[in-house]
Length: 110
Image (cartoon, rainbow, N blue to C red; front, top):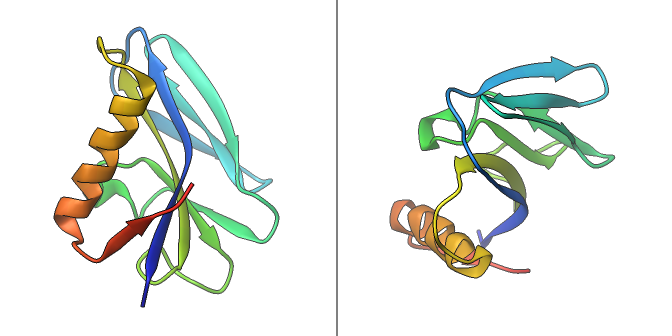
């Protein structure tokens, strides 16, 4: 099965510590860092999941209802990281390479 990762949101922040997640009833949650809180809501027809991505270091993942993080053709995730001296493009490329090293059949589409 072809896998597609949609990078929904990559947030670069000035500082961050342990991420704590609070789920909200609307199918989303709030990601907390030491200097930021970000509200994330899954698109209509998608699930917001705070457990399936934790093994890969991803605190919040989303995928279409009726599928799972493991078998979905389309996936989105949110990851908050400390700001580094790099461009957004290089940050995204590094994130993609991290996932490709764990899954060689991974394909990425914008």
